[in-house]
Length: 292
Image 1 (cartoon, rainbow, N blue to C red):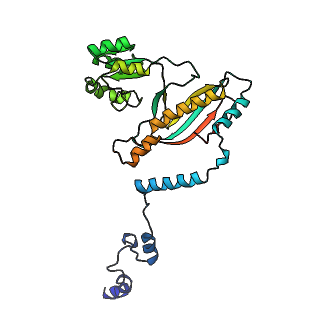
Image 2: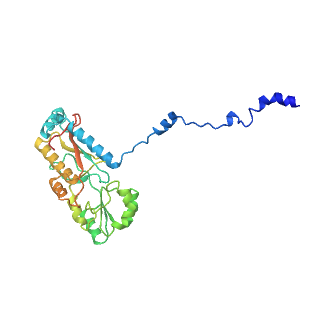
Image 3: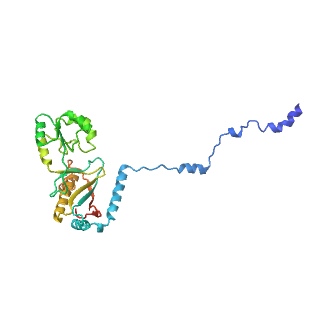
């Protein structure tokens, strides 16, 4: 027996205390893998302030590279489009304005009476939230729908389709909780800033009678048929100048608004820049205007 153990000893003694290779945990401390782990970098997300500064730099570079030779004066652009539409004297001359709407600023909108209307004005539908004597005055002034809080359901269900909505100060708190989310995105919610929350309902209706409303879309584009091709050039220019004055007044691009901002008046409106003004026609090209 002892001789048998002496023969097997060289084979089983080296295997004592060893673990099977598949059960061993592999560790590495090689410099290559450590270097790869250290080189992993996080994605840098710029702040809102840095992103805004970058956008301003890009806009400044783009304005410097803008070729002003492609622009025409107002009278030259009208002459070009009239020559294109010589066979269509009843076609319209369209005005396109691109505004730069900032976050938190309402879309530009206003009312204007052109010296010579290019199209038949659409009839306004006026809805008034008023009670008592003010309701009677609104009916006499020509309001289409007059009432109190009982009109709220009709407005939400689109039973009362109004283009202008007015309200007295006494009822604005009663209608705001339910109508704010409905009329706000449409730009129809009465507000003191726009003058649609007022005690002088009849006076407001008289002021807007005979005027047409213009409104920018969500991206800041304003489209307006400004004249007919058979209009004299002087009438076309008057219409364009008159409409641009209304847009500049609403967007804060007038001299008075600039003076107010220089005085750091806290009540001054934020300016909405006018980026582009173009004239076009049905068959003609779009021409950028230099002197608007």
